[in-house]
Image (cartoon, rainbow, N blue to C red):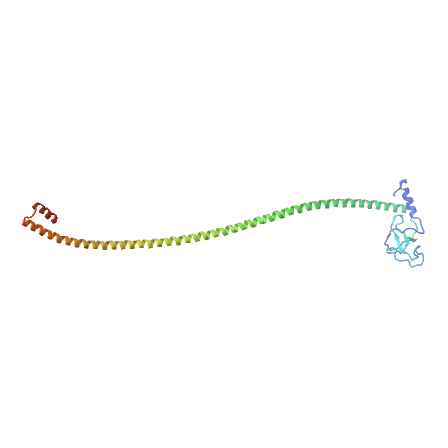
Length: 265
């Protein structure tokens, strides 16, 4: 069985003082008891201040825990005049001490829970603060990553645009090269045709020149033949004259023979 020392004398005296039956006292905390509740049906007793029929209640505080009583029915918006009458008498002193000890243990446990709750709230506040700092840090890093990602996307887009532009430029260059090739081929064909026309013209000129030369040659040959015929006639005449002179004995016979030799050659 539990024992109490002399240090608990003051608490015992307080318990005994609280457990005294008083005509008017403050209403203790109560608990719900299904077998003892509702308003009192009898006309007496009545609450001291309001003279109303009291309500059945069961105390749940200190050494009066479990004692039934009739309490003032005024609970809100008014003055509660406390206990009208105790139904159960005071508990034995040992029981009151046990109840006081139990309530002390309850309050100590509750105080420990309050302290634990405060520590928990402090730790929770610290963790929340750290979480908020980490969250702010993560948000900052996330913003940086978003900026870097946006920049990377822009760079990739620019690279693809540059590649597309390069492909288009290459295609344009190929088309221009093909066009230049066609132009060069057409120009070469035109130059060949011009060379052919020029060669044909030169050939015509050569043929015309040859025709003129042949024509002039033939004309010159005809003129030569005519001149030759004239010379032949003149030679014949001169031979006749020389022969006549030789026969008649005029001039130098030697010179006449030389003239005759020239005419015969």
